[in-house]
Image (cartoon, rainbow, N blue to C red; front, top):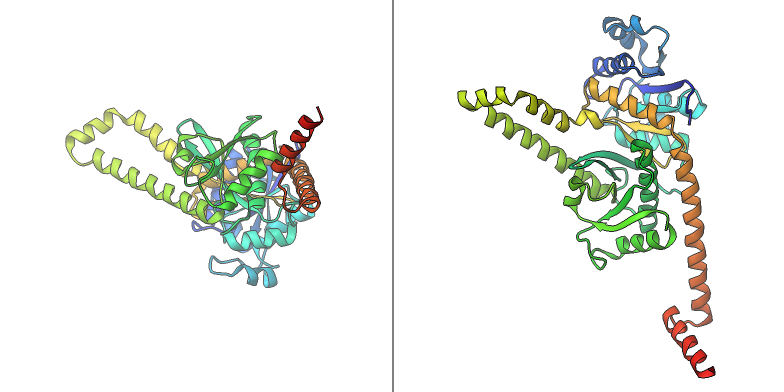
Length: 378
């Protein structure tokens, strides 16, 4: 965390679908919008410099440095290959800048699997956190929510879902300033008996071990866009499907609206009269506004930008990285994880001791027996 000091952001300039024009253009746009940070563009200098000069990089002299890297991580590269032979790539070098303390955050549009693997390898996990989680900001009817995990882990244990909840709560607080965000577990129903044992176990742990959290229990898929809770927790398999479904639905609705408003002269005239409102709708549905998903749980700040982001999206991801680098949410995650882990351990020790003392007697039976003895003694 650097509250008021100068932030340095390390960028994997060679990642993404849009090429250097998009990444470099987004970096310059962020600086023009007032980003108070120094930027490191990691990649092949002979390719980056001409683009930077052509897009007006001279106007930001002193705010951008190019850090040469020989190779690029492609979207087809396997994470294991990058971990073994990727030290000379732009992605590796961008993350290494955070590890060495030369930068406070890294932003990449590149291969998600490789980014996660190399980030874990170099930065390591926060103590008590098993796996990182990718977090997405999600527009809702009442503002925005965050959903995690949206792709880092195909499966998650009950304990990992609890860790995701703690990390998501701290992230939402940093993102919005809300001191007590509400948290829900994504399930097939809101009733306590719904869902499989794993998710019910996660709910039990959250209720018993993190009583400071505003845990609202289970939420359903339609609660995400309603904004029923601020933080929605799920495994990466379910979260990624939900995210891609929402993106596809938004594109479909956008296409339908465009067709409806351009189908005839009358509809075009109506669209002209509604232009102000339509621009507002387009702004709300623009995914670039919320681009930039942090990989939570690492000993360092890593922001995954959408591979297909435009320059506006890159600028938004850099603004997010800058804001998070100035907030102590990473320290909050560490302290809360430690506290909850200790409480769960004490709870488990107590249950083990009770089961050892009376293997056939559960705590409820024991409590009832003790009450009966007291009545008899009276």
